[in-house]
Amino acid sequence: MNEMTLPAREGKRGPNPALWWVNDQGDEVKWSFREMTDLTRRAANVFTQTGGLRQGDHLALILPRVPEWWLVTVGCIRTGIVFMPGTTLMKARDILYRLQVSKAKGIITTDTLAPEVDSVASECPALKIKFLVSDHSRKGWLDFRSLIKSASSDHTCVKSKTMDPMAIFFTSGTTGLPKMAKHNQGLALRSSFPSCRKLLQLKTSDVFWCLSDPGWITATLASMLEPWTAGSTVFVHHLPQFDHNVIVQTFFKYPITQCLAAPSVFRMILQQDFTSLRFPTLEHTCAGGEALLPEEQEQWRRQTGVLLYQVYGQSETGITCGILRGMKIKPGSMGKAIPPFDIQIIDDKGNVLPPDTEGNIGIRIKPTKPIGLFMCYQDDPVKTAEVECGDFYNTGDRATMDAEGYIWFLGRSDDVINASGYRIGPTEVESALAEHPAVAESAVVSSPDLIRGEVVKAFVVLTPQFLSRDRGQLTKELQEHVKSVTAPYKYPRKVEFVPELPKTITGKIKRNELRKKEFGQL
Ligand code: BCO
Image 1: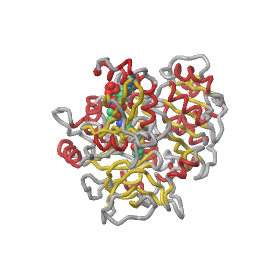
Image 2: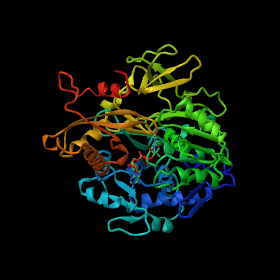
Image 3: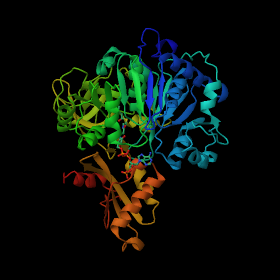
Image 4: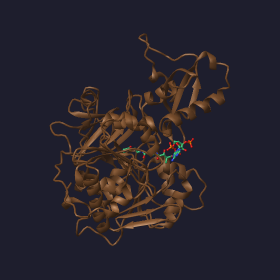
């Protein structure tokens, strides 16, 4: 991506702002595309001239929904610095892991997380520079807001190539800690492909609101690349914590025309008793990140008068398939593959399966890897090779495809949990639980839930000294413990105490058996 392909290029600008940011206190930021150009050039200069960062360096980006997030991401794209978004729900240990494994040279965050970073920074030898987004200063940190004000807006983009790295998204797997899905500049380029433009058919007059946390790939795509490629307005509500009332009021108050959020968000709104959900300007809504039920799509249409389209993707892939705007909706289906992705349902050897047969969702990577698919798991050739299956990248998601090419999601093929759109690795939760003295051992699996689709459930074997303790009290204690040591979205919403865990003869815990029981399959 270079200056010529930045969304703010001449001829694409509408009269509406590029970024329209609001919060609950009545503050508002509106930046035009011209202002975004100016400010992101300054950000680029802050990173390279003041911070000494260079093309290819890794920058941990842990910001809430503040306007600076957009300056940082585009500033990085201008300079070729690889940005690594992360949710602000992370705790010190999550941050430490990310900084160490990525060898990040820089970090940018707010004063809420700066103490957590400082508590682990001495263990991160590669970390050279820390930027703070705050109205206060902090020792050892550069003040990003003041630097932006004083930086020059004279900047020339690096001449990056499509295959040059752009961003790293951390994503959970069945084993170990999150992997680093590395994307090249093709992720941004893909947004400009005509096939991809058909998904939302955004216009310069559109005001697009993506509710995803800025830590996930969905925000990079739907809160930046997609709308700005079309010259649309990116709308952002600060929304420090989920609140269905605020979301509904926002739809009434601002001229939002399109929205993308996790199905849980729509579900949580529908479960309230709002007198009206007839939003004055909303025309198009999309749900992605987890399964959406046909009855939820129908309920949303009945109450809002707006259709709810499904999209599907992963941190490794971006949006791979969906119901394009105007395409026939088959309730419950995630739609069709979006070229250049060729999606097929494959068996474990990479053979393409016939229509209506259950298998893994595969994206063809041979003879040519499609633009927009991740490059690799950074520094992990073994895990990268594991997801290659014949001529395909194996998503690990199970589905069927009908004769018309519509894809129907069924679930994961492994132990990864998808709770309200969060991909959670069981071992991350199990290792957090293991630190509590009450836990002898645990097994963490997915469990069905009416609101969040799935939730994290922990089966816990207690240590002898805790056997007589009140189970309700202990459940709360374990939940609070997990929330305190790792990002709270991972905490087990269900806990069951068991005398022992099912194991294979070699002593491996049979999570599969526990999960099947949860879903009533045994
Ligand atoms: O249940 P509790 O209240 O006890 O705990 C919750 C929250 O209260 C707490 N929490 C959240 N924000 C906090 C906080 N605590 C302190 N400070 C904060 N700022 O953490 C616990 C877990 O939160 P949660 O996020 O699971 O639940 P919540 O707050 O009800 O939010 C619901 C959703 C639906 C808004 C949330 O789950 C969500 O944002 N889900 C979507 C995730 C997403 O965007 N996924 C996309 C991934 S990328 C992808 O799939 C590729 C697609 C192309």
